Length: 473
Image 1 (spheres, helix red, strand yellow):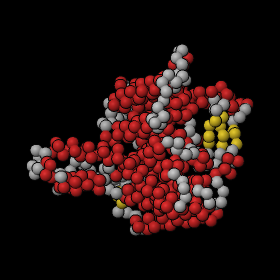
Image 2 (tube, rainbow, N blue to C red):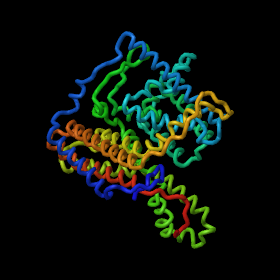
Image 3 (tube, helix red, strand yellow):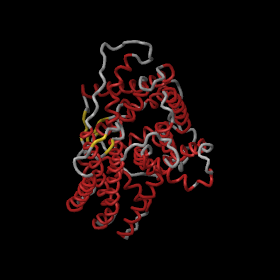
Image 4 (cartoon, helix red, strand yellow):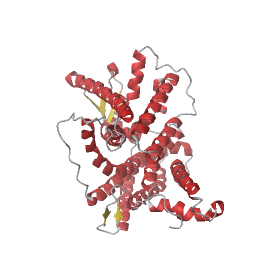
């Protein structure tokens, strides 16, 4: 029996769960064997298959207008999210800002980025606001304060952790989201004015870093073009990730948090995770709080929330330790004199497809159920009883759990196969001989198989509700 995280609907698997694990593991091993036998070149060959589109004439003019329209639309969506958070319905299910930000921006737009590339870099609403400040006479491109070299992507990492914390633990109120976006806008514009627009948007703007990492998988790339409109270049899927590497350890941590935060989101409400605190940890620490459970309930509940919060913050550290251990094993096997820091930066983009697959398997079913909510919310964005749209929307039918489960398995497996592919070509670039490159991938293969089994196991865990359970219950 398996329980889907989103729907809590039981689904009996047609074959034993262990067969899914063996099947996925065997697929990864076979993919590795084929790559080791067939692949002999590095990613440089992928650069030969690039083609620019929408280069001239009416197509170019249409592209320019499209980019301009999308920039206006992105800025308007940000303004709408803040305005409806302040003056719209207090019910999150009725507030259009909640749907725009959490469903359309962080979910649907992220998956669209895998197909169309880093479109966010073109329409970033905070970049648009910076452009408005420039037209008002402020020089937003000048570096008034030198950006600390050691800071690198750490501001984006910190803001990413804060974003996920708000998603998981803050009250899901529209006003909370509006206040967070206002504060983020102030911080972003202040950072742009202090350190310069290019530097701040590259290193510290969390959404810019997030979508740039995801966009490396896409078959579309945007390169600088005339009149503030980028040119569109088609390339092989995954080729962008082949050419990327983390230029600082903070970007390694950022990508690992993309993976660990989704895994943590999937387990933090399960019986397994909740039981570790209430049924495993507290009995060990009983001398600290005594035997009177009722009088200690407030303290225990506060400790529980700290347990949850620290679990989120510690999750990338756990993944980083595991990742570095695998890379160290690869160095030992190959006896290559390659610094561990260099390997961490070169191989981390092979984890991006896995992070995206984890993200999709966890969030897409919920997203599909919530996408249609936008239309009725557009008809009455401020909850005033308006009917701006001439039609009513019927609620979507529940998704069949059999389709959901098998699609999740396929997506998870596809992400891991892509990860094996990227790791293999990265190894051919880093290690001096092909034999060393293949040998270095044995620990990475074990890591991929482990991630696959972990992902399937997490999907099979039943949710634990309620979260506050009695000690010894």
